[in-house]
Amino acid sequence: MSAHPIRPLPPGSTLGVLGGGQLGRMFAHAAQAMGYFTAVLDPDPESPAGLISHHHIPTGYEDPDGLARLAGLSDAITTEFENVPAVSLAALAGQCPVAPAARAVAVAQDRAQEKAHFVRCGVPCAPYAVIETAEQRAAVSADLLPGILKTARLGYDGKGQVRVPTAAALATAWASVGSVPCVLEKMLPLQLECSVIVARGADGATVHLPVQRNLHRDGILAVTEVYEGNLPPALAQQAVDAAISIAQGLDYVGVLCVEFFVLQDGSLVVNEIAPRPHNSGHYSQNACDVSQFELQVRTLAGLPLVQPRQHSAAVMLNLLGDLWFAHGETAQTPPWAAVLRLPGTHLHLYGKTLAKHGRKMGHLNITAPTAEAARATALQAAAILGIAPF
Ligand code: ATP
Ligand code: MG
Image 1 (cartoon, rainbow, N blue to C red):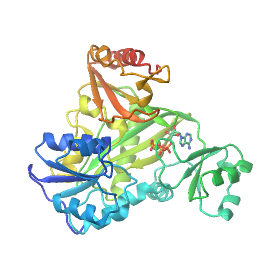
Image 2 (cartoon, rainbow, N blue to C red; image 1 turned 180 degrees about the vertical axis):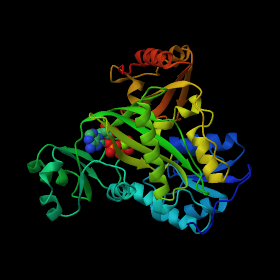
Image 3 (cartoon, rainbow, N blue to C red; image 1 turned 60 degrees about the vertical axis):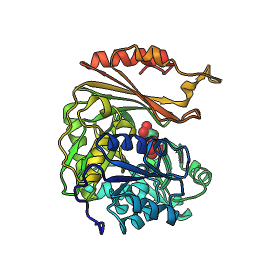
């Protein structure tokens, strides 16, 4: 529990965010729309959130002066990426309300702790072994292979992961990630992937967004589809219940994303959690009456949480830097006008000037009255942009 509990903060207060990426930017937009001031700490002078915030502190995440300035400016502070040092959050919590708490973020930062939490909550996850020593590596059960070796910390978008086909390949795989602490996970036969955004207030009140169905390509989220029938209803309810119990088990305050696998046999397995809004929840900006970023503002400012209502079927297409290169090399501006001519298309760009392959530059939300219409428009938009059909 923070020394500074969250009390309702009126508009006009300043909400701080540790991290200045696109999630911080969209949080700041939502906060500003509701009349809050925002302060961002991020070392990048052109960070997406720093560019649009009232205050930008361009220091490192562990810089004591930077942290003190953020705490001095802010009435409450949140974070926008999970690799923010939990010690920084803990230091800030001594000076001002912080949500989510350092303790919850620390669990999400470490795959071994995360999995232990799933087990505690009784939510099935992939069979796994923690590998921190050569002895543990040598003792790995053959049942876990073929598997995926994931570094316990600092992985994202499929980075820090190596596929391990056989026990013989494990030693090389572990060496290739620098023999850092890892989790070896059994490779599961996936039918599909989905995720749930949960928001939990300091009073324990919990609301959630509808379950998102996600398509990953090369370890990066490519497409999210949310509409009635995207998943069997009983399975969707199971995912929501599991996500809420995971949030409650952490005594979580803020927005939490829980990612799941659905296996070939239809069973649900939790993959990982993100202690913040998530790429798969971006559709809520245009398809729901409360977005995941407004939920983050409400949890941080101690405002009431009401169950969001999805009013439109939605498809979200991630816009990766690859789209800025014609035929894979010549720089180009994607044909926005042609896409925006389609009904129900909503363009979100993060203000990043340098496009790189695989870099998240923005996303396109497509809304429509029906799932069929949303999918048809999304497929048209994808074809115009050069995104493979789904
Ligand atoms: P992000 O942070 O972008 O969500 P990440 O780098 O943390 O990604 P994971 O979510 O662990 O990585 O894995 C990325 C993708 O790899 C998954 O979405 C899934 O498609 C595949 N994957 C991961 N673990 C397994 C597994 N045990 N069995 C089968 N596929 C898996
Ligand atoms: Mg993931």
